[in-house]
Length: 419
Ligand code: AMP
Ligand code: GLY
Image (tube, rainbow, N blue to C red; front, side, top):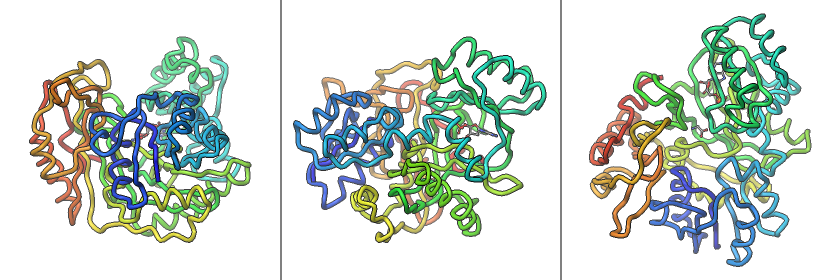
């Protein structure tokens, strides 16, 4: 099969790395890809959000299957466009991707179908939003409605902070249009775990659990990032919790989407908080997480191509999905200053030595004209190791990470240990 993966970060490198191992995949392409992805797939110079251009390229090059990984093209309806062109595509259609693209939608869905989540209200006007904050008090959480690259969420410790966040979103349009509607919700407490699941519209099959580190610095300090590291599975997610989440959250969510005429096909990401009242949904994403994918796919035994086809064909209930034993850890090596301002274009050394100890997924790299890898993004690399135990996986990932260096390189030293 000729397969195209859409996207170009560490997550897409992990997806391509896994697909390259499938005997079914004879030709693998990635658009736009990156310098690391180019080791396992042919990179195609089409932007991930160029829906028309992507369909044109896919038709001209006779792809058999398309996997759309990032949130933006999913929200833009790239899967719908592929289907209209007669090309099987993995990922939710636009009307289902809205579960991530609109927090107002997902909160309403959870309320209607009694799926446990934080209490909330949605606002499109500033004054009632400010009055609600005043009435509720702090701590309180303010969220911009649309996709804001994971940065449109403020967990406010004081009423003033919450008021300021609402003003920035609704008055100053800090997140553009995505802030014209805000969701204000109760602040939950407890450890956070992530469960990704495959879905074919009717059946939902959870993957191994994972946990990522969103803050930039050790001890969960500093600004929120896309994710600085992750482990899989997480010891906090017990079999008892897994049963409860399946009954109270995973199956009801997929059934709710089906009942709403928005069958969810693809990967659904459940961001969960283990509160004193039980597991509750913090957020849904309509895709694989980054960097969770790097550890999860490292633990997956089954052919990913088989799973994706079963999701598209609606035959997921007939597939036996198997996982490796042990655990995996990914440590993200970032550019100094990320997620704020940072420099790009520094040469990276030690990749070969690190590659002998772990799998190094590239998130933001490019090749210079002498064939050297240069930094080319905020998150640069995801050093990923698997081992018999979580401790051993963490140690192995750090041992490999220590081989790599570039100017101003920054990584957290407590991945898998600070939750
Ligand atoms: P989100 O983009 O919705 O996942 O939010 C980003 C982060 O903000 C989450 O990972 C949580 O750590 C935190 N957060 C979001 N909603 C809540 C909430 N209702 N209570 C406490 N923390 C929250
Ligand atoms: N690591 C969080 C996300 O992909 O949204």
